[in-house]
Amino acid sequence: GNIFFDKNLPNFEVVLNRYKVFKEKEEDTWSWFDFTKNHYDINLILDVGCNVGVYSLLAAKNFKKSKILSFDASLANCNVTQKLWEINFKKKIVRGNLVVQQGMLGAKKNSIESIGSFSIDAGETIGTIKDRLIKSKKNNFNVIKFPLSLIGKFDNLYKEKIKNIAIKIDVDGGELDLIKGISKSQWIKIKSIAIEVDLFDFKNLNKIISYLNKLGFKSSKSNVEFLKFYYF
Image 1 (cartoon, rainbow, N blue to C red):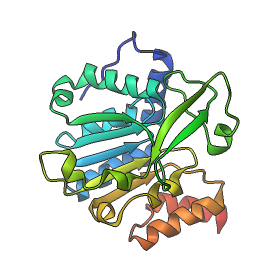
Image 2 (cartoon, one colour):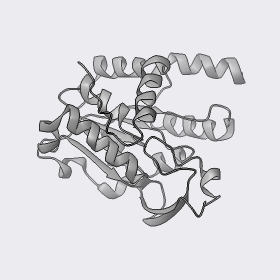
Image 3 (cartoon, helix red, strand yellow):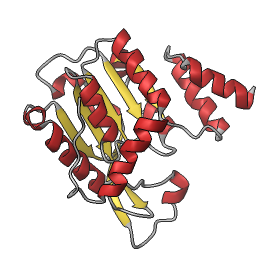
């Protein structure tokens, strides 16, 4: 279907550029879309680190019967995500099918994370963990950090029973902490997962792959070929 944008969106050019980059350069994500649609009857998609909601928007277009639950540490990004949804899916928002929440997900107990980012404008990222240690005084803000397990059963969030979940993660270095914060009962319902990682941080990458392999997940063919090319 068509995707609609509004020039009155905050930082509109950055938001539009993110959509163009996603459409033109993230081939693996499109392949993951197709694979997940063809193999599972997904009724909940989690978009963790949704930025301005471009992925969430396209997921809603591709998985028309699924509910979308998105998280981002930046309030500006959450607001733009909400506005993009309002432009494209007003009825689904009213029904609670599309929900965005500010927050950071991690493996530790609930805490308040103090973040120093290069920019708090919509479409910008909060940077890697190393970047956040800088704690820029100008752009410093606090955000709640909690494990996904704290949510408990996803069935409790919706009237319909949640059977199959797909999850996309893009959290700039916090991937391992995040997946360790997912409970066993939640993992049972997660059928497909896409994680954006730093492919040149091999130590962390190996830990993520090993953790997911133990849970029964396998890397896509394209990812395996890429890893073999660079590391084996």
